Image (cartoon, rainbow, N blue to C red; front, side, top):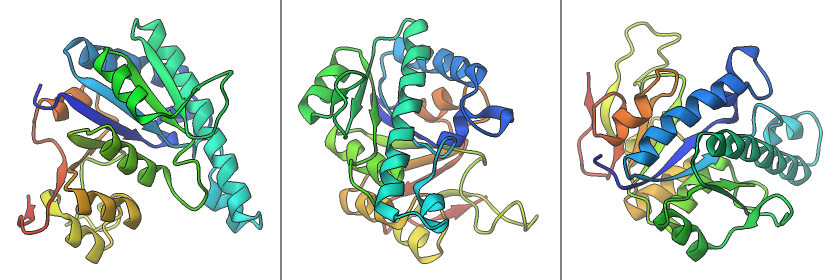
Length: 243
């Protein structure tokens, strides 16, 4: 494995499968099998899950809810996803801890950075839930923040497409995929990898982001092993390359 400690960011929608909402147990089982193989290979793995399959704060706010109130509801949705993922992982034999930025000790540990690192060093997978614990910040930003705090080597961003394109590939058939692209180019061209706050945080601290297609079984392990199957966001000054 090329990377020894990684943070995997998945959207809540990645858990809903073909049913279009909620949590698909078959998707959880597939992910657990893939993550077990990575865990057994010696990689320390942390997860951040979104909550959009259950409730999205921005959508609630656009429908007239108070934005802070809606965001807290979205944070609770990420805890539900984290507990479901924990159950699947532990059934696969992986010791797992859910750490929440909002205290709810009956179901999750409170987030403490040094404890999270200790879990990882002791071969326990960690799922970070409830975002940053603050409204107006996305789970993308939470992933970037947690990756810095645990000293991850890379953020793996699983998506529905096989990388970052110069145009929307669903609309423009001639769109080309980047092999690499720098943070500033992502922000300048609004390439929709992660939100601007998360990208800026990664740029400031030199955290690479590997974007790949989550729908292909085995892709998580391939990215960790260094295969060129998606797009890597790299420091400014490294020239972007298209294929």
